[in-house]
Length: 437
Ligand code: ADP
Ligand code: ZN
Image (cartoon, protein in one colour):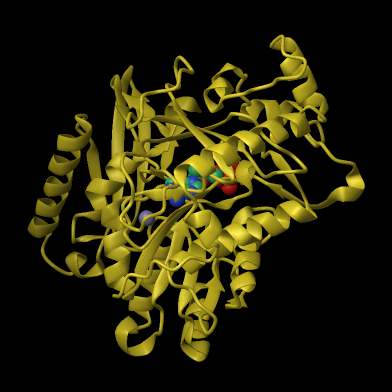
């Protein structure tokens, strides 16, 4: 494939480092001024002994207090809004993966800025007028639907707001109208690939898909490769969270070495989640983001709980917006079994590299007689269930061994037929921890 380095917004994408830092400082100062219009930040800054926080260097942001998800919950619904109600045009909410969802309000300008940012991302990976874009994310309060929708329309793609679910119908659409581009979660895409195979379709012969924008949950390089092969597409990683608009905060360029975090819109820091201290460039920690363009509900030093690191150096595409490594997971995704810290993404990485593994898996943790028990249920391709029992045992043993080498803990592995684990059409729930019941 020819690598495109074209820009949708060259003045911002190709901005020089010095100009960008100056822009960030100015925008940060304006954002702080705007934030103090909300009851929440007035109180937060007062408590920190800063009635009007002023900064004259970007590093001084480190003196400001963090904003946490819990703060948003506590100030539900309007506590962080900085404009009169008549200026607000849209409400979104986080999907509530880790508790009660949080609300985000946008002005007209905010929605337009977000759409331009998404347009920038899509254009960067080669989406152009003439592409048919099927947005297979849930529409509604979740930002994956409308967020991409407006950005795609802005560039002039033909947008099909199909939402998630109804997989066979979606695939019929692919065939009938010649969809070229999809936006989908990786877990749903694994299911989609399974249904395409069940319908006996050959992507290179029967479909015109060429690009998939994939995000909303962590996934490994192995999953990307698996999906690229199964659907004959190129997959680009898209990161975002509703508190920072939604999708489009960071996005892979065609060189796919990390995700460019759009620093003209967000000021990123990576901190040690325990101490709250900013880490040296390149170390893994929690991503903290400050909005630089938001009008209706600016957020200062928002703790995303997402774990990543900055990738050093300038990307081959020439954009200087810093790159983050694919998100490893949330700090609160981590579970501890027999004293060992494990991320679901570690298990996913191992499984998706094993050719016999099909689309889905589930991690179940129990405690029996004071001992933690880790079980990994894995769907195996149908053809292996037609073979003999011995070969299934060998697969099971291979999976157990590979998992143990990565996560240290020795898991029980249960092989199940495709379709046994309920498929996800949005964000997958991969862990059932019965110890918490
Ligand atoms: P919730 O926090 O309730 O899930 P959101 O819908 O705002 O609500 O989801 C944002 C979260 O989804 C991010 O904080 C991150 O944990 C996850 N996420 C989004 N995009 C990606 C991605 N490309 N890779 C990994 N995780 C992602
Ligand atoms: Zn790049």
